[in-house]
Amino acid sequence: MKKTLLLICFTILTNLSGLLIKAQIVTFQYESKTPEGKHTIADSQQDLINILNKTQTIYLIEISMASKVRLLDKRTFIDKAVITNDGIVITTRLTTFNLNVVRSLNRIFVVDGFPFQNYGKKYVDYRTEVDLPDGTGVYIGCLDKELMCRLVDDFYFIKTQTAAEANDKELARFNSVVEKYRELAAKPQPSEEQRKYIVQANAAAQTKDYNQAIDHYQQVLKISETSYPEAYFNLALLYGQESLFGNAILNMKKYLVLKPDASDARAAQDKIYEWEAGINK
Image (cartoon, rainbow, N blue to C red; front, top):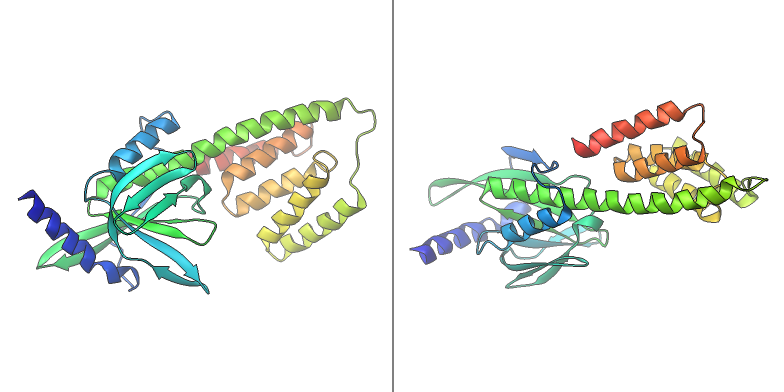
């Protein structure tokens, strides 16, 4: 009986292969949030592994980009998932895929529900997409709504909490840099090279090319971390504009460390509260 049910499920999922390319009506949508009752990354990792290792339940489809055209590999059930230092190694009958949600391009993870019929019965296919910086990614899904919502909550917690811990370490390092800066009798001023990048960053921001503006401000800070505190303030606003709230918070905190008595310190702190609410919604 169990084998028969699994075969039916596999047939259903196989018949769904073309649905990822065709336009569909979404009848359910869920945005990831901080999961209740979980306090560590290890908790979410363990729950994630428990979900992904449910035999013949969760499927995976690889995504790749070629000339800006999305190419999809075949859908297969996940046979095994293992947490490693560099993400989650997922093995299926067709592939082995390293899924690193921390490095993913996703700010949040969304579950979409797509209704379909098979042999006269109605079902809903629930799936989420994870996109990676190298142009690859995966669709992960199953017919169980609760499992998929738990899965994206785990993804979200692992990504945001890992970023928060990394930001705490970076802020501690930066504090030691600022301590030495405060001991200087003559504080460093922006160099001509920095001024060039500042002008270019402001010009890019004016045309709403936020990614280019971010790149220019990062160049300013590579030359000197302390000679132009306003770079942190402006970077924070740019990251906030792109909904990269973790980066926005880190840079605004750096600005406040460098200029705790700035006239806009209260406004800067209010932006931090706003972005923290965006992360923890």
